[in-house]
Length: 211
Image 1 (cartoon, rainbow, N blue to C red):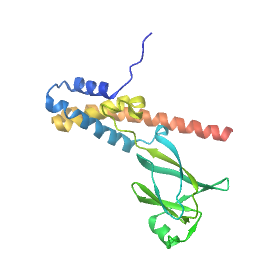
Image 2 (image 1 turned 45 degrees about the horizontal axis):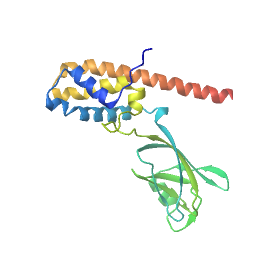
Image 3 (image 1 turned 90 degrees about the horizontal axis):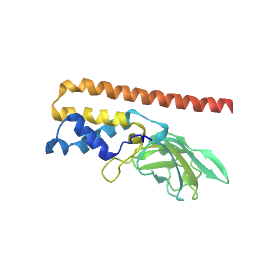
Image 4 (image 1 turned 180 degrees about the horizontal axis):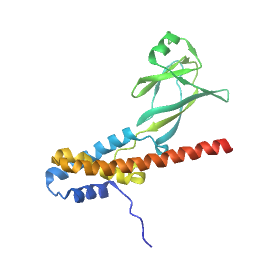
């Protein structure tokens, strides 16, 4: 029985070294950076269901600022529960919240939220109680390194990770003639991933209509 190969951080490092045909220390020491840059580019290009995460929390009474989950990337939906009923909290601009609820000391049931900064939300009205809330959001993957051998990219986008890392290596190696090669293979891998995700979203919509 043949076991399918599974990409890990170590195997990715080894593959990059093999494809580049380089064994010099200067290049090998840069491979973790190539991988990090590839992860950042890949994360900016795709938003997949695999990155969607649901987080539950509890607001602090009289405090309109709420901590975002670790590795938060983008909020999809926000709701608050009171009296057993769930109500949506709608996204608005920071300026709208400040005009709508200028006095933070006044409290009520939050109806709107905005990104206060990269690690916090701001809600208005200021919570009158410790309301339960739930957020659906896109999560950044835990970065790959020797201590974290796998993440969503290695499991579901190994080709994109490999070709993306090789593409990131080209400027360092001053190997401009290979850029179109790795770019084409990377673009193909990304296109396949996006098509797969569109099919998955379409399937979800069909299920909703049929149910």
